[in-house]
Length: 449
Image (cartoon, rainbow, N blue to C red):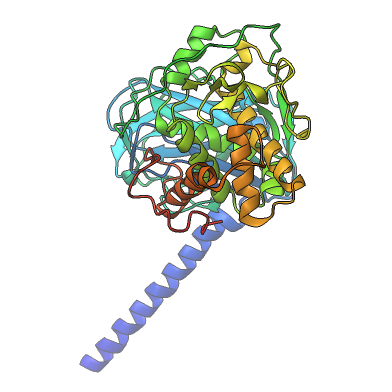
């Protein structure tokens, strides 16, 4: 009798397992295999505690029919750690940042969720064809710049370094769930009207980190006829070089740049590397974007320790922005050595509007480095020497006739700092290093390259 019961019990367990497998298979098929929309994501900022959440999204049409983008909504679920008003930015998108909207919804708290961000599209008279994809890079922050804890957020992925499929970000087409798994127990939400993308940042609270003394202010460039920054066509679509809206006053730009957090400056630099990745990779030879990020973060650390508005120098050496872009990098620069060998990136005229826009300063810094890299290659340098002399050219204006001691102090220091960011996974958080930091391994400054 006992044996019969055991057999019956085992049979019941087996049936339960089969039913569970079939149910999971059906569920998985419903969520993934039959979906017309696939959503791949990663977090641009993976710090556990941070004042900025940075979801990056790639939406792919896997179905047989075209989809109108205005019918698509994407939801990212998180915990707010408070009850503050929040702001949304679209930093970049292949459909244009101005066509991306963000709306916040508060919900009855459950594990991993008390808010979600709904991303939508407006003013886009285009469809997503079968097999086509779009990318969207966003940020959210509280008005008072207090911190989020991302580790308890339903949609947060601390490990992904690039786009991966996840069922913890959901997508809706014409109001119907088409991708992902809604958090269990989520109740009907309510929220404010859709928020327009914001470009001019509010006053953030900088992260508490070691600070170096800032150089003394120098003479600013004389204003010249302004050229309105224009969107640039890059390998990743249309990208606006300027960080501030056209017409923003010089004082407002200085204040806004000065109040960028270390983390925001990192994101700003990396967005520009993303936008110009094609020419950055082909000129500098990096095998991954992460190595390129680390390289420019090392440059920024050697120059300004992620101070968005730091200004140093005098005359032609007068510079601005986290990459300390010199006046010589700009066009119409009073006869200084012209940089006409980087046609892939727009060269802005030297005037106050362009000089003090931190976004244009980063663009011109990248362009300035690529110019010196091409000068280094033309001089016959290869391998690590190619990068070392490109960097010394960035600093001195000449890729040759620089002594070994200065190459080590400047170029190799940048290489060592870049290695610190890369090897310690500090590409996206608020942590930073500085010249002379004993935690930086300088024994092999270019071992990561």
